[in-house]
Length: 177
Image 1: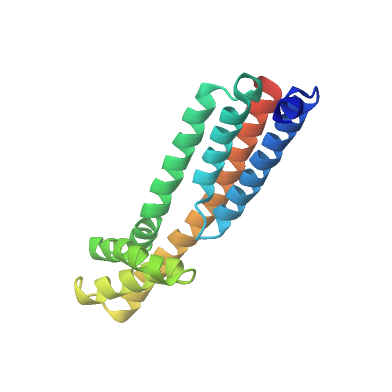
Image 2 (image 1 turned 90 degrees about the vertical axis):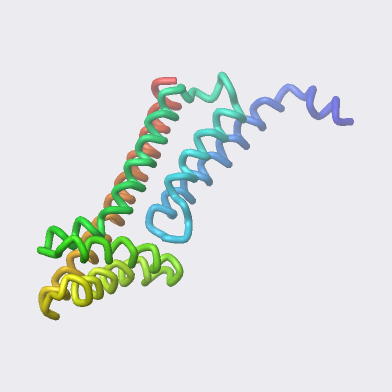
């Protein structure tokens, strides 16, 4: 029976359609993960490209350099997300203590999703400015708000990078490869 199924002339088209369906679903989940903090969106987009290549091999249209670009964008986005709260704190006049507090607050905020991702750096920068840098409440609050602004900017960057990753993959597969 299996030989008859696999020997069917339309089997290749069904397999390709199934691979495309799974790839597109992974790409949509990856884009959603660019916004939702509990889903590793950019990693899922890279996994979609890898799945597409493994499922269709030569017919996939995925070039090796696409993986380099996608992984580079993933790494750059993660690095930006990691330092954005600290950079925002410094941009708003915070000290190195505010930046350290923002980074530690971002780590602590992971355990209190989704609000912890914004409140963690804000509270961390504020607390470190007040406790260690001996800043007045107003300056500590300004540093904390800066870390929140930096964190929100990282969400915007994550969405833009996610869209660029999906477009890059689709252009490679549909027009170049």
